[in-house]
Amino acid sequence: MTKFGQAEYGDFMARMFADKLDEILETTEKQNFNRRNTEDIYKEFVSSKDAA
Image (cartoon, rainbow, N blue to C red; front, side, top):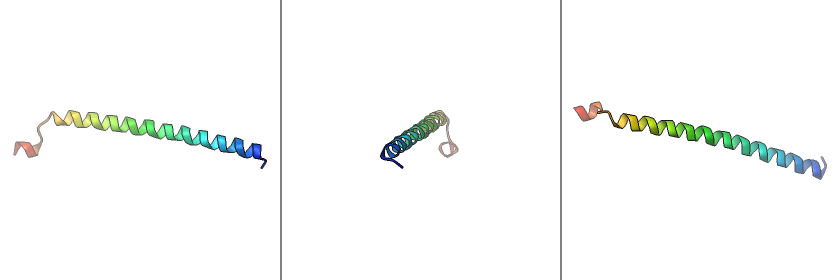
């Protein structure tokens, strides 16, 4: 592989990694947002432990 080919391949792999990382971070942010919303909703209800 020529040096130019190696540089192109390295650039390609870096872009692929960055794109995949962006996807993972977006998914994680959505999951955390949904989890926080669920926790906020359930905080409004009395639990069975509090009622006893």
